[in-house]
Picture 1 (cartoon, rainbow, N blue to C red):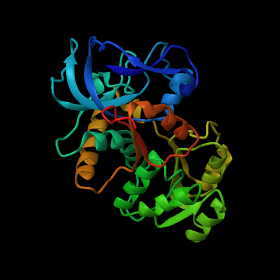
Picture 2 (spheres, rainbow, N blue to C red):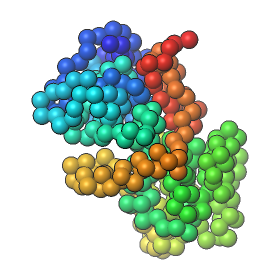
Picture 3 (cartoon, helix red, strand yellow):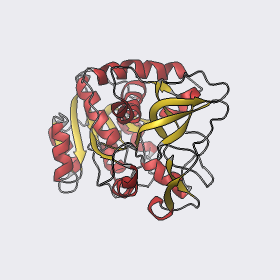
Length: 331
C-alpha cells in the first residue's frame, strides 16, 4: 500500500513522506478499508503539529477519517467484509493512504444510493451543521441565520441546511471568488468581509434587528463582531476556531442582550448519546441522496497532491471540501 507517514511533528508539508508499506493489520475493534476518499481537515494539520486535543505519537499516517470498502476485520468488530463504510481512523493508520484502519464502533455504513466520495464530503460538514443548527441551535423555519466562513466546508453545509429548513440566510466570506460561491449555494444576502463592513451590512439587511442564529466556525476577531449581531434571545453557535485564536464572550453583553452562547462538539456525543448521531444521519443521508443537500467539492486530489491541498487549506484558499482520492492518477 502507499501512505503518507509522519516520523516527527511539524507542518505536514515539512515532515510527511509518501512511501510503500505493508498493509496494516486491524486490531481489536478495528477494520481495514481500501480507501476511496478521505477529506482534508484543518484538524489534520494540528494533528501533525501535535497541537490537536487528541494527540498521536509519531510515526503515524494522518487523516482523521476515510471511506471505502472493508477488506479485513480485527476481533470484536461488527462489520462485514465488502461493506461500504465511513469511519474514524485508528491505530495510527489514517486516511491519507490507499488503505486505512478505522474504528468499528464509530464506522457508519454508507447507503447504496450515496456515492462514497459524496459521503466522505458530506459526513463531517453536514453532521456539524445538523448538530449546530438543529440540536444545539434549535433552528426553526422563518428565522434569520448568519453563517461566517460560508464558502468553507462546514460553512457551505450550514448555508444549504438553513435554506432547506426555510430560513433566511446571510453568508459572509472573504473575497470575490468565495462570495460568488455563496451565491451559488443560494444565500439570500452575501457579504464580503474583506471589503465590506460585516456589522453594518448585516444590520442593514435585518432592519437593525440582527440574526436569530450566528454560526461561527472562525473565532478570533470575527467573534466580537458576531456576538454584536445576535438578535434578542438569539443563539451564537461556537463551531470552531479556524482563525487559530480562541475568543471570550463578556458575560454582561450576554446578559443585556439575553442571548445564548452555545458550544458545538459533535464528537462529544459518541459514547454519550449515540442515538442522537443515528438521528442526525438518518436525516442527512436521504437529503444527500435526493440532492437537497449537495456537498460542495472544490478539488479531488491524487495521493501525490496531498501537500498542496493541505497548504491551500491552511492558507484558506479552498472552498467547500477537498478530497484525497488514492485511485486518481497523478499528472
